[in-house]
Length: 177
Image 1 (cartoon, rainbow, N blue to C red):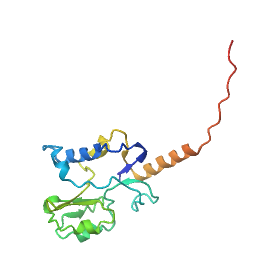
Image 2 (cartoon, rainbow, N blue to C red):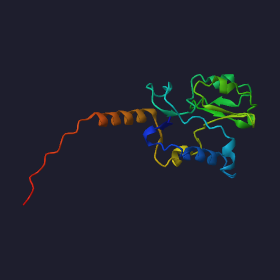
Image 3 (tube, one colour):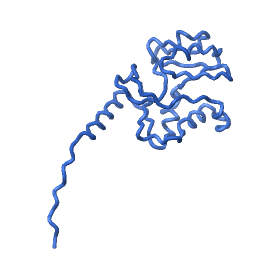
């Protein structure tokens, strides 16, 4: 299952193109800038290990890791959070949410955001209806990538090998007269 990963060296502080794209994607025919003030954006990055995907502490965006078993689904009183038995992804039906925020309390990764003004909780759905999430498509520097965890780990190992290699000085050729 492909996931969103974060490359901190590429991120521009204060850019927020990923957040704007997310809001724009989920509010298709509404104003994009007006709802931004009311949304409590989570931290972009955590560096604790993502237990379900990669075992080493690497920075990653705050997102649902689709735990097995998902504590948020078990705690949801209204049944708005459900786990798809086919692919194991946790989905959120916002219309069914009653705003008890039990899912927020039980999520070990802080991936569920409470919206007290609207009495609902929201979480990243990974833009399941498109090829890649809106945040990944909007990132101007490629700091967010959407790949399989194994692919991400291979890229990190390759990057580490490149950094560790010794660069030999080039032999200079005699100048022509």
